[in-house]
Length: 177
Image (tube, rainbow, N blue to C red; front, side):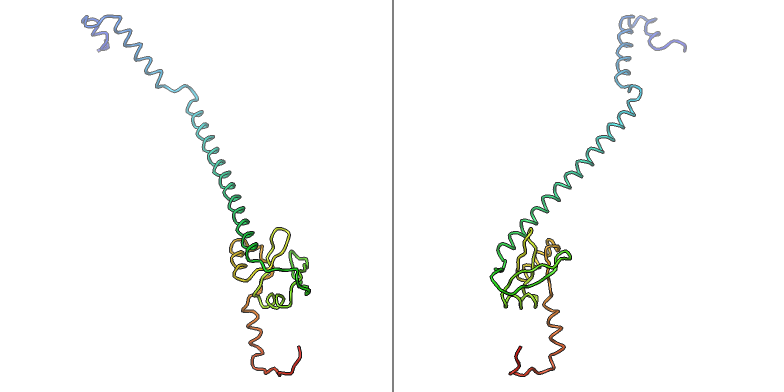
């Protein structure tokens, strides 16, 4: 049992020494190819970790890019809504004061527009560094996209609640306002 299978074949003269050496050489080549060098496993995990980090960083950059594109699209939609539905302002002689970022601002409107602003039919919207006056449904669309753009938003229901408190009082016809 001390003899290996190769030695037994050599003694029986079924194979010659040259074929045994060639077989041993091939066997050694296969072992060398399949064996990993020292530290290869650690290096392999480092490479995989670096690839995972790069993929996560790329996903983050792509997410930021998509968010920026969405913001630009929303800004373009708001600009289009304001351009199409804005009520002409600046033609009136009544100053209408409102607050923007803690500062009192003023737009000039007509008497009719002032009343509609007070009732909440019209709303003041900020576009870039200017202000525009738009109807309530358009302001609601703008607020659904970017609520910070709608500056003066009085609900139509607020005024109705105030009027209901005085509904029982009759106003004389000859009274001057």
